[in-house]
Amino acid sequence: MPELGPHAAFIIAAYAVAFVAFGALTLFTVEDDRKQRRLLMEMERRGIRRRSATKPAAPSVKMAKPKAAKAPSKRGTPRPRKTRS
Amino acid sequence: MISLANPTRFLGLVEIVVPWLTALVVILLGAGLYLSFFVAPPDYQQGETVRIMYIHVPSAWLAMGIYAIIAIAALGTLIWRHPLADVAAKAAAPIGATFTFVVLVTGSLWGKPMWGTYWVWDARLTSLLVLFLLYLGLIALWQAIEEPGRAGRAAAILALVGAINLPIIKFSVDWWNTLHQPASVFRAGGPTIDPSLLTPLFVMAAAFVALFVLLHLIAMRAEILRRRVRALQQSQVEHAALAGA
Image (cartoon, rainbow over all chains, first blue to last red; front, side, top):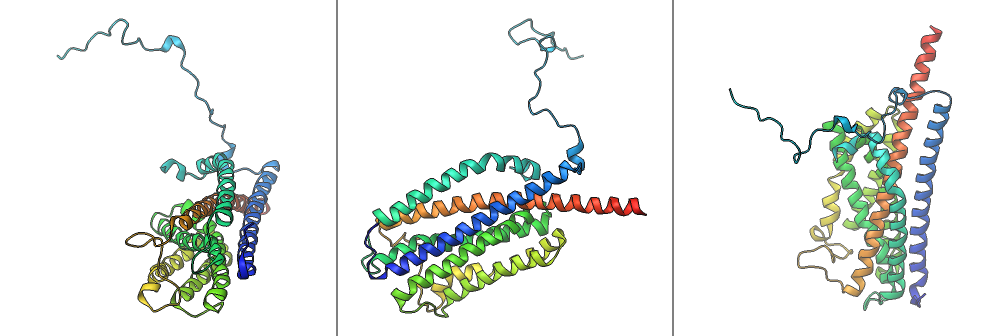
């Protein structure tokens, strides 16, 4: 810590106020977030759900298509060309 | 970007981003405080009190920037009626108020040894006090009106009216004869501050921006969940009323 000179009290007070203000804001924000999560989980445990939450969940990973359904590659047998009538 | 405007997708993104942002805030704040106290030299005029600048100036930038975000979100609420716009504005207000409070207090603590007084009714200081009162007014308005949609629209109008204060804060030092010094970083012709003092300032500013983004995302998530809880409670009451009838 460097020597803060004759106005050290003002410098320390400024940093202390900022630390307390931002610390209190962080605690308040995080606590509010936790409280809302708790409330929502509590309601879901009691069977109260949003309409969209009662639908079956979509799979997070899409299933790969079966190999048989795979289209022939470009290198393979060429598809017959469409002719203009 | 548009897909993130969906609240559920937004919540998923917040879940991923918050741990990384927390780490970034800790690293930037640690680096910024180290540079501010152990690397930056004392100013030739202000001496050691220049160290107050490393929290005062970034807080001032954030105080104004957050209000600008609220004003843009207010447009989103009034024009497009997007639910996340109102959530973003409401979540940002307490954070903006805290940054403005820090600017006012640290400015006073810097003013006493440098100007000989904690406070003067000068245009810059007064307009910043008005900004703080605007933040408090917005928070009070959101608390006073129970229905989120109505509260959001009322707060959006107040936020847009209050946005006129932003250019007044910025240019007050040019338009009027003030005790507060004119702009010395973002000005035509470049900064007037030496790089040895400017680097810690920018690192602290980056730390404060990261802190704001982190807290804003968490506060937005809390607000979305609060509205879901409220909607569920309302539907419960309606079901109970219907069953009783």
